[in-house]
Length: 575
Image 1 (cartoon, rainbow, N blue to C red):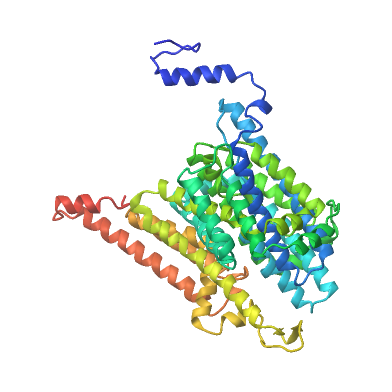
Image 2: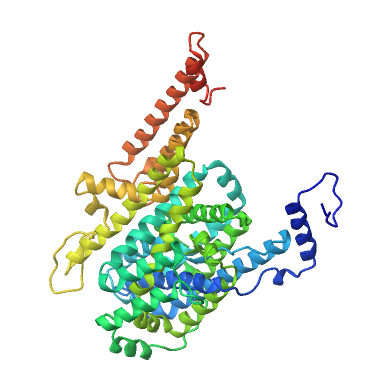
């Protein structure tokens, strides 16, 4: 056996020698050359990352167009997103290069980065729309709503940075299946189910490209030298044009809106922080959600062989979110789920670098509307569907079979959050004329059909079913983690640890961090009628689990216990 240049005391295998020789030959490589700037797999990954973020951004902009003027949306928010995208993508490219140089790796794929999709809908509906309608609508209300959203977003980013030092402790304390399951709830509910709902509005255009993409990425059916995602996009685009879904006038209209609108720093929203205090109930849970999401994404990357520093990953997300807010965006930024899918495509760092630059150009130039006119979002969405699907597949592959019940339980709150937003959208569509908020009528048509804001507390309190849907949907990622952690410890017969998680759930429920719209002091509850019932339910669960722990521990010590029973019972977490 040929020895490497390193001195070793024990014989080593050939594979170990090869690794040592590779590390030796690369130790003098500059960090910025540690990974190739471009590989063929970057093309597919770029298409996925770019289209996913573009679709999210355009959906959020379209949602806000109902109340905010185009000057705010396309002159402040969209350019701010462009700056944050460039910063975040550059941050994680550098992170991958430094990690590769430190460990002598040549196969790393950097963490994908982009807009926090659930956060867009949460901030739009829970902050910007609420402020706008409370202020009575109009130009002043639109300006104030944007400012409050921007400041809340800055607070969210600052909290993410503040949580970075304790990130590894959080990661070590939470069972892996709880982290992966809650992340999968975003993938299956928002990236897959929500996108599929939009796709079926254009079934002729969207069904065939989706299954064509699956054939390429899951079955390996590809055209040589053609990126896997290109053919489905062009097929969908062609069908859209042939069927009349995409039209020349829409392209012409979008082309007229192209112009150079660079981002500028906006400090005026930060003159009065007191205006954002009532909305910290949304900003704080979202910050916790994104922080945990960063832990989840980093964990999935580590499972794929790319182990990045967790603290710096959380700092990168928080800094990008604060930069977005300083440049006028109320939407948070975060590392993206789907690292395994992009790594499977063969991507490394080029896809993120291209996405950052391309997004900056699109956001500053108004090209986003033109791209959407040529390739409608429904044509690009099959890539989002695949990412949402593969996230769940990867999580299942690394989850032990005995913990599958915990994984499935973790998926449920995400569907309730999605269902809640769909129900609100349905109610808003029925309210053609307007609705009443705190006695003030808000209308945009000649007559009103509804008296209640579809997102108002009073709307969800109409029936017990609606109330429970809302409670299960609010704070859904934290709820997924809590439930999955409890189930994992029950399956492993660690009943006392399951009780601890039940008490944590009770504490979070008592102040509105889960199952509520806003955060509040327990003795100043602004929650609904379920508030104390939820707290009591979790406390009772903890009592029963502690009792179970004590009983099983005592039974395991009884002399009359048979050998097989003792073996079974002694797997509990008794001292």
